[in-house]
Length: 131
Image (cartoon, rainbow, N blue to C red):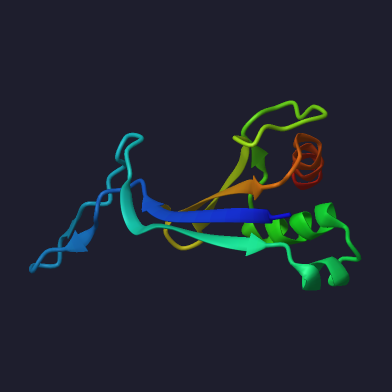
């Protein structure tokens, strides 16, 4: 069986590019009214459950998933409330604003459970992560 966690990150800015003119004046940095510009293109990494993970987490697939997802900072499930099952189209999302640049540099992250997850297992992971 194949249990995979897809983690996608995209770094964006909700402000126009800022700079300094040759005379020392500043320009740009205005709010883009909901639009954004890409700073770093989206990239996806995958975590796959294997025999070493099964041994380390003593066969507890849900704990493994929660331990892998927690460091990503995602907390918002795509659907709420979370019932006894979650579809394979469900995902988590989260965002992290740079402490120095604020909405001028935001890392947006989404996480999906792909592979052989059952709807019940997905729901258990969603409940555990969104607490």
